[in-house]
Structures are given as structure tokens and as C-alpha cells.
Image (cartoon, rainbow, N blue to C red; front, side, top):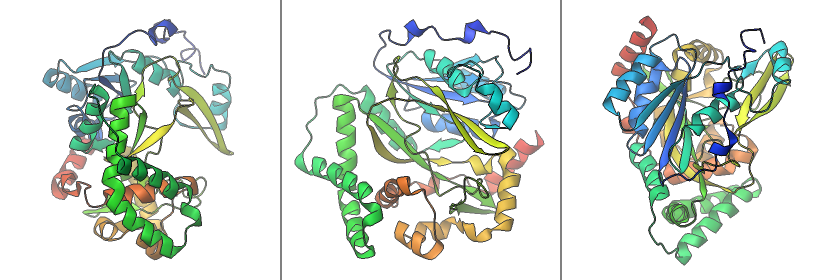
Length: 382
């Protein structure tokens, strides 16, 4: 870290006493922005109705991020608050030299994503919060239902079938790898029948106990006027690290109570020489519940990533599938026909969530393909 980076920036260090102050019931969204113009406005418009407020913190932006935030602030003056973050922040992907530098920093240093995120959370006015990424386009109604549950003080009763549906979900995930093909077909029929009861159980647990619910999404790529979904690869950590699996987010983006025990720390991941990562992770001992597929993840469509995803599509086109074909197949058909790859510890979760949500995913809310191309080109030219 050079001398500029080593400046103290004490005003961005979080006073620990702020975490456990009393906050009114409600949900704060936390969004960090660093050259996030591509889908920022669409992201905010898709989640703002569900939130009581949105804390937007931007850092080192040279694109249209700040004008977009200011325009959104004019539209939603009672919901959006904007802060500029001045300290240098190490990116996720690091060289060996950068990685060595981060090892000498506190786990919540203002120069790490953990400190950056904690600063944003410290600005939250409301009792519950969720971190939002600017490349997510939320399913509005489903997201608002979860936010409403956290705001609710209703007295609810959990019925035996809802409780049984939750126990079935846990059995499905735990035993996914050991189930035969025949058993999985039977289990999937039960998923379709029981999933409404499972999600009803979770919403009631949120209303009654304010449990932590994790949300997930679907990765999307676009090429030659067609929506595509990457199928993942078992060498994703090394050779094919940019070929995402079809789904995004598993127990890393979730609703939580703002408190001293729910803050972010650095997590160091030395992958291989020249390729290291430092992530922000919330270390806690609370149980997370899986709340379903709630957004389209547009990372592969970002201007800064389109070239690399285009490269991998040209190199291994069989690891991408047209959206129309993807929608037509069950998870097990995707596995059998196209060898879709998801990390084993997450596969049962995503198999259940996709089977449960397949027919209600709002595919019609995807941007119009022609309009989408115009917007991308305008972003590139700006």
C-alpha cells in the first residue's frame, strides 16, 4: 500500500457503540458502487419498493454512477441516502504482492471490502438490513414479500404441513448426493407439491422469530441477441473461473439484524500463484434459511466483463445454454443432458430452489433484447 493508501481516514472507521443502538422496525438496503452504472438504475428500481431506505455508498467512480445515484435521490428523496467512500479499497482479485499487503491489515480495515461494507451498514436507520449488489435485478413482488415479513408484527401460527415441508427441504438437501435417479424424480414431485408450504413456513418464521433468510438468483449472459446461461465447470477455481454456474448467491446475501455480532471481516483465499482473493464475510453462528431465487444476476453482461465472457463462450460454447432450452428442462435433465456443474455442497439447495421456482420465475421481466442492446451500446459509448 502506498503512502496515499496508508492515510488513516478515521472518519470512515466505525464506532463500535453504533451497532447495538435501538433502531425502528424496518429494512435498510445496503449497496456499494464502484463504476456501477450499467444496471444500477434497474437494480434500484427493482428493490426500492420493498425497502424502507437504501444506503448507497460509492467509491472511486469514473462512469455515470454518481449522476445516476443523484437522479434516483431526486426521485426517492425519502428513501435514498448517498455517501462517498474515500479510502483506497483493495479489489477482490489480488496479485501476490497485493495479497501480502492485505495480510498486514486489520480484518475490518477501511481499505478492505469488509471495512467498506461495515461503513455502509453503520449508516442504516432500520433494525434489519440486506446487502445488495448493483448487478442484481430483483423480482419486485417476491422481494417485497420478504421485506414485509421483516416489518410485520403479526401473530402467526405454523401448521403441521408447513413444518413438515420445511423438514422435507432439509432432508432433500442433506441426502441429495445419495439419492438414486428414481428417488430424485419422486422427491422432485414432492418439491413441486410442498414448496408453497415451505415458503409459507419461512415467511411465518421471519414474522414470528425474525430468522435470517438468504436469497439467490440466476446468472445471465447475452450473445448475438440471445440470452444464455452458463453451465459451470468443475475447474471453476482454476482454468474456468469465469464460467459461472446457472445460479448466484448461496448464503452470502441475506437479511440480518444490524448489531455488533453481524459485521463483516476479511476472508483470505490464496487460490494459486498470482491469483488470490480477499472477500468480505459475516462470521456468525446463526442458522440461515434459503428463501429462493429472487433476482437476475447481470454480472456477465457488465461492460467490464463482456469481453471475458465472450472469450469463454467462443472457446467452450458447450458450457453455455440458450435460455429457451434452459427453461424447458428440469434440473435433473440439465444435469443429464448438459452436465451442469454446481459445487456439491450447494447442489441440493439449488436443485430444490429451481424445481420449486421454475414456473414462477418472471422471465418476461427481462429487458427487451433490442432495447437491452441499445442500452448496453449507450453505456459503452458514454
